[in-house]
Image 1 (cartoon, rainbow, N blue to C red):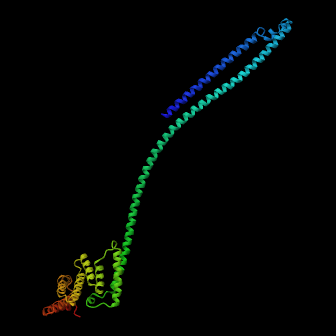
Image 2: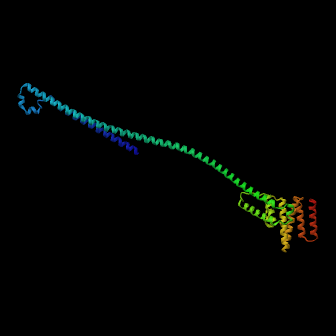
Image 3: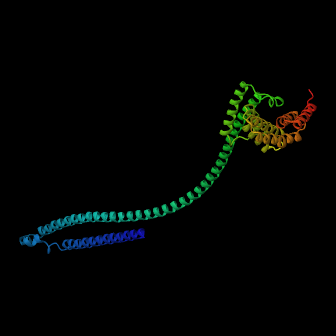
Length: 347
């Protein structure tokens, strides 16, 4: 709407200038024609119109030669004066025409500028629209490519995170295995450590390793996965430290992983045996009998059923009978268990 109004104003201005130019040129031509006619009339009728001759009547009385000369001089003066006026007016006409042409030229230039600006505005709008469409298309393609790259990078990041997590897990597992392996060095062999008391120096070393392992498990709980053997080794170390309750807990963790782990069942029976002996020394006979019975019925017998050739289970079961039933029946059961152990390992 604004462009149309401006174009209309420019058109009106151009028409006004054209009419003004045409009127000026026409008026000037009329003035030149009138002036030229007057001068021509004066030249054709010099005597009648000569103010100089009329004002000097004595000159009319001169000789014909003088009169002719006087008329010729007057005509020449009038012609010179007419040519001077004509060229003056002609120069003024040239100036006026030049000015008018310049005004018309400026009007045309202004119109051309307006047309160019209009075309430029139209081309600019078309270019902007084309650029917007192109940029939108390019932006969409770049956005798709960026999103694809983002998801690819995200997948790479996830892979890196998984790799780092696996690396941390592997390091945690290796450290755990190293501590468990070191524990194994200080734990007595299976066939003797249940009957012997561990030396104080070994207990001191085991205590440090158990603390280190428990702290490692606590700080890397989400990364570690303990095996049945790990639980049994930790239980054995706690057993050697005479912490039978916590040892029993570790053996039970092993049986949760593998219910038929006879080595863990044997460990629970041994822990119950030591707890029963403690209750017996403290005079808690009923509690001690309950622990002895649980050790035999729930754990030793099951361990022997799984592995009947393990002589330690037969020996410890005999010890339980001896401490639990201090009578002929208990002695008979104890001897029976020991006989089975001797059959397995005669020497």
